[in-house]
Image (cartoon, rainbow, N blue to C red; front, side):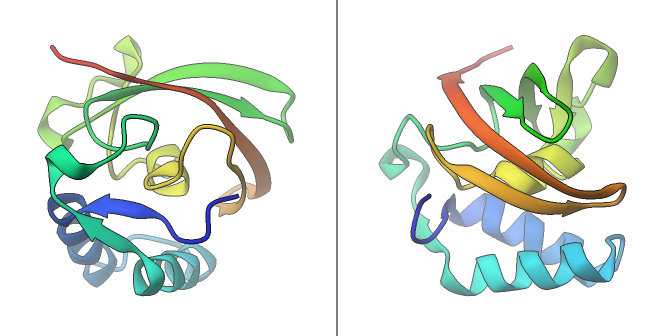
Length: 126
């Protein structure tokens, strides 16, 4: 697992703003605050291609539910869950953003702790 997550400054700011709105469970909030505290902030062009962020297609393995999924993380306004396009502030995006291919994350989702592995990250454009 990565030492610290890597975020663009823009994504970092969006998550901080989301935290201020108190729309998360206390477990999610505490985990995000801890992750942001140690996060490395970079410019978009400096973000490694294998890191989960906005406008990337991400293949994850949910070890808890024993299922593999392909998700596209987009800006809040572009989210269309029926088309597998999820907001960068969705539960799965918040759990995986800043992590890279090969990382395994244990995350306190609203329905309980789950173990998620990032299998693949690809650039995605509309």
